[in-house]
Image (tube, rainbow, N blue to C red):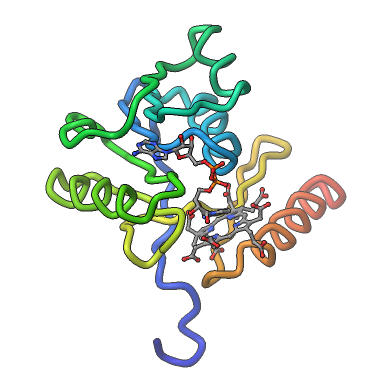
Length: 157
Ligand SMILES: C[C@@]1(CC(=O)O)c2cc3[nH]c(cc4nc(cc5[nH]c(cc(n2)[C@H]1CCC(=O)O)[C@@](C)(CC(=O)O)[C@@H]5CCC(=O)O)C(CC(=O)O)=C4CCC(=O)O)c(CCC(=O)O)c3CC(=O)O
Ligand SMILES: NC(=O)C1=CN([C@@H]2O[C@H](COP(=O)(O)OP(=O)(O)OC[C@H]3O[C@@H](n4cnc5c(N)ncnc54)[C@H](O)[C@@H]3O)[C@@H](O)[C@H]2O)C=CC1
């Protein structure tokens, strides 16, 4: 990458309301990201053999669908966006490969460069959404996000 080019990602705001999003894996990373997808109005399907209780509770409330089983080829059919968030590299690779075949943008949690989308650190304040992407430094992205939210609130921007 050229010096100063920054992250290779092109930042975009997806309007996901009513659109199918498939999340493979239902652990810690999924628990952080799935509520944001639900807030965006996405039609979320979570697929995993072991589902965290907070995600199961969201499913029980009708906010999303859970399939308590392993990922199978074909699960991404009709998805606009997908997230490969399992702790098994070969499964995440298979999900990304299926997403490529469908031309569905897909995050890969364990090896981000192998996916086709990245999750920014995002925040909301005063009717504004801020989002930050670094280059493989998520904790820095989180710090910058927190500061941007403070500035929006504190300075009334
Ligand atoms: C590139 C990206 C792609 C993507 O995943 O979308 C990615 C990738 C990876 N993250 C890894 C690790 C961690 N990520 C977090 C946290 C966050 N990660 C997020 C985003 C992104 N992470 C994408 C853009 C990031 C950017 O470049 O700016 C945030 C901002 C947003 C969100 O997740 O919602 C959220 C913080 C915001 C919040 O908290 O609000 C923590 C902390 C924690 O989990 O508590 C750890 C443990 C760190 C430690 O312990 O040091 C690993 C190694 C995995 C492994 O070891 O296998 C990879 C893999 C790789 O870089 O290839
Ligand atoms: N990108 C990021 O922000 C971060 C990425 N990671 C990485 O992301 C991955 C996931 O991390 P965690 O959520 O902490 O893991 P976790 O162990 O909490 O959850 C893993 C989930 O994957 C599911 N799973 C396993 N095999 C599956 C299969 N065949 N089909 C469908 N689901 C399957 C499990 O049932 C479980 O729900 C790990 O590789 C970890 O290193 C970790 C922290 C942050």
